Length: 334
Ligand code: UT7
Image (cartoon, rainbow, N blue to C red; front, side):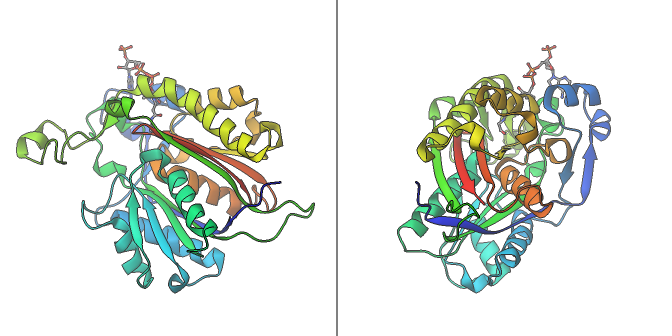
């Protein structure tokens, strides 16, 4: 039997209050509510108001997670923020979160693995806890994508939303009523740079430093070849979940919930069917929040823990894929 090193001590999430519906988008670009629902499953998404920045959303989610874990900010040994929409290129958004939480001088850094950022973060946190170097690690997935979306590009602007989700990982302990250990049972993370061009913000870095011309050409906004990502997403979400399960010796039937990255309902359906998992076990909120990239899984997880749908002792399989491409799977017993 697997002996987990770390366990989820608390979770939290934050969604900004502004709701942008498909009907709102119909007024902005040549699209339709029907197309968006049929091709993605999205009905509405949340948009951060002016003045709210990435670290504000991350901090709000982190505060909830700390409260749920019954910990203080000063109890944190490390802060990892998965994001591709940081407050600014330097310093890390994680240090602003640290400042806003009043978390002392623990290491705080950002992690760029796009939609897989949260699973990458959990995997890294788990290694530090496993080695005994760290005890309580805050892992946040947060995105303020509305500020890097080209709102004239119908192929991307209908997909994304803003939000944050947070988890505190701490040393494993305790068991379920039937004696199974609670905790993070496995993580599997991977990247393949061969598909790097499929999803990117091409401008603003060393390749194409920010100029007025670059801004006019919208090179500081998200560019995506959706079809390229779609195909690989179904294949890799299946394989990442399967490999993470294999590491635990469990089968898909033994999992209580699949908590997948919410990029497209069709991708989720195809991957779940391939895994042989019935629809009732697949957690979904894409209709309400759209694709929030690295925030997607921790938001979904927290919503379902707070509603009582996911209960202590349940086994949850998480999987995500995004720009990079980077992808991963994780199996957790709550
Ligand atoms: O989380 C990060 C990872 N990202 C993903 O996992 C995204 C993966 N990709 C996808 O989810 C899908 O590819 C999309 C939702 C982005 C697009 O759906 P699709 O079924 O692959 O559509 P498509 O790109 O093949 O486009 C089909 C048609 C095209 O028109 P023509 O060429 O057939 O005339 C598009 O121009 O749909 C058109 N189209 C739209 N029509 C109305 C594209 N976007 C829209 C739109 N409204 N918003």
